[in-house]
Image (cartoon, rainbow, N blue to C red):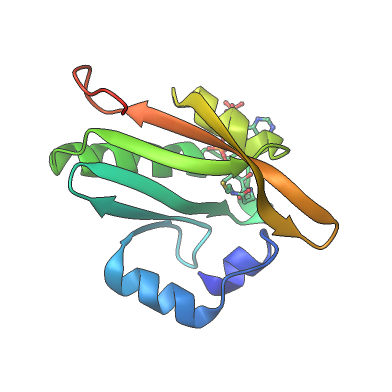
Length: 136
Ligand SMILES: CC(C)(COP(=O)(O)OP(=O)(O)OC[C@H]1O[C@@H](n2cnc3c(N)ncnc32)[C@H](O)[C@@H]1OP(=O)(O)O)[C@@H](O)C(=O)NCCC(=O)NCCS
């Protein structure tokens, strides 16, 4: 997971962080060897997507969509009501993926991510897993 993450995201998360996530959060993967994965934190009835990555050599093959589908069905089985995530506002592929899966843009957090070239805002997205859930 750490190696795949390092190919896609700067700064990459160190291996120790991945070990911690594997012990504490929901981690789902595609492929053997690993081609894509997602990490979700689930607390009470809410999930948060901490990261989702598809290896650059395996993008646009439906892995991201499949991981989100699986996430939603697992959280649904656990009576999850809402899924949140943050994404850099210039991350066109990820934003397209979330919109494709029906996530709604609900907020913007300025200067949220630190990058070598400067800070960039995050957009917050949310998806309701059942029609009766409300945000706030
Ligand atoms: C975002 C990411 C996970 C998408 O993974 P993926 O496996 O390539 O996504 P999928 O093949 O399942 O794409 C599903 C849909 O998302 C959208 N999408 C995915 N990549 C896209 C791109 N480069 N441009 C436009 N839309 C894109 C499309 O709607 C696509 O459906 P389509 O193929 O029928 O057009 C991948 O680009 C990635 O790993 N990026 C780097 C890491 C990252 O930024 N993660 C998000 C952190 S918040």
